[in-house]
Length: 533
Image (cartoon, rainbow, N blue to C red; front, side):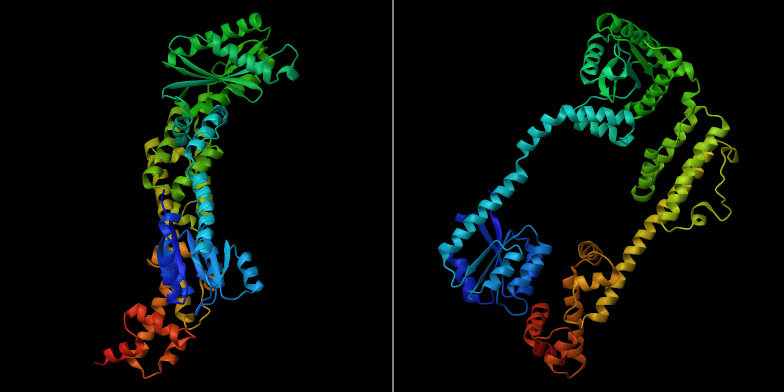
């Protein structure tokens, strides 16, 4: 099993050497990956090495062990912390426990005691690792949940709660075969024998079982699921002209149910659709068909296409469409924006709508884009032009292709402006941070928390963003600024080293010299002398 990583922190080199030599790290399941002589150095090492365990003294120069633990709780929350001290002081122990420290050990440290502590920590880490990596248990639980997840998938598919581009991936995840082709949805309303109150789960389960067993239309596949207080059939037709044989088969099942179950079934059938991704529209048509059962009478099949011949000509810009368009324009690629616009134009072209209904559909799309423009802080004129009034008609274009190009250009323009605004915003934030550092690097208390309070960002988000844009962490950047200024002062002035330390944010000249030598490879005095040699 992979060894756990340990960082050892103590300002006394002899103690570090003793601990590193006396502990049989591999036999305990650990590997000593780094050592540090103070809290400041340990904090930087922890960022690079990501240790599982940090062993630290409490009394150290520059930054004590308690402050180190406090900061590690934020930057490395998963690490186990062990502190040791030569002071049998309850207050130290109390503070250590309040910071989530795993163990508190009194000096002098002996190998058996530390070995026991490490053994206990290994057990904790092993349990954590097993919980995280026990994929077999997770897989078994997942498989046990699959029937429920599949039923939920079908319900959400019929309700339009799954984005079209996610349908195939979700189906594959739940091991459901949903091939392309012509699909239709039918909803089954149970008409008796006791009325509405009799349609309980057991009754619906018996209807589901009946339909699954007796559906026998050749060259068609069907999946029968429970859908609210109804049963739903998801039917894949081998050809579009198989719709009317489907209606005849459903009529047969409705009559057979009366004989077998003593139940009348009214079945609403939606318009065929091209692919399982559009089954929610067919289901919506089936619901509309069932609304006619009061007038048409129960115990029969009602096809929405017979009652509303123009039902195909009524696409609407639903909430899911708004979310999909917004996501593509705001966060997608150019190709995803193009695909979204193409999909909208295909729906419009296949609908056979009247001009007024086309205009209504287009108005809903444009309104969505205008809202997106304003919420993104972009001027509407930048996207739609100076003379744009919001009134757009299909009649303004010579063809649907021209309308598609116009709409695609508006979407791509907005996509570009929103992306540029996000990029500019990030750059401005980083520049503000750099300006703040340039004006406050002389302050020893300068920290990522004080900077984030100034620019109104969370430290975690800022740290990630700053490192991505600048290429180094906040701490490393501040150190670089201070060291560059210190080097300039050493070259260009005769100021004492302790004065230069104060001028660059170090109250302790010894720590300044330590950091300077680590940064440049020379002590401040040697650096000054080499600059004039």
